[in-house]
Amino acid sequence: MKECKIENLYNLDETIAKKIFEGCEYPWEVLPKIKDFIIELGETLSSDEYDKVGENVWIAKDAKVAPTAFINGPAIIGKGAEVRHCAFIRGNAIVGENAVVGNSTELKNVILFNNVQVPHYNYVGDSILGYKSHMGAGSITSNVKSDKKLVIVKNGEEKIETGLKKFGAMVGDNVEVGCGSILNPGSVIGRNTNIYPLSSVRGVIKENSIYKKQGEVVEKM
Image (cartoon, rainbow, N blue to C red):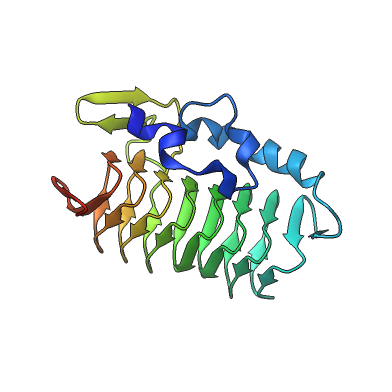
């Protein structure tokens, strides 16, 4: 399932977390490693560039964090990032350089690459969002199946058992997710793809596509 491989989804030069992907074939393999990785990486960050605030929380000196935002560690907020009013970072979160975490947005066990925008009422859990990906207002990742079974990534007749109970979405670089959309557990969205507003997405969506609805995905011209 080559569409789901790390090198086909992400430019690893656009994240401070590049090293976590070493030795992995698929991006969801790093989800259980995020917490320990942040703690290890955080201790190496320059005190000239980052402030350590609270337990295992590192915030770049030039990042903008609203006083009403809540950040629980482990977490790293990158250079030039903006964490807005009433954002809720529950922990195990890397917010990339120049990324935006907006009003009432909640993050949990995630890696946001550089320039990611989750600016309005988003929930992103157990997920990885690639460089310059953007989630429209109210769009979320659903990270647990309703039957609580382990998540399986499906691409037509192909299947990969992940062994994970919690797995939201792997969103490639430059993906646009429309307002009010749900990325169901195990979704993988290829690079440069657009998701129509109010979509319910599941499975693998190939790169350079426009997702209109289930069963109607067209190639970008």
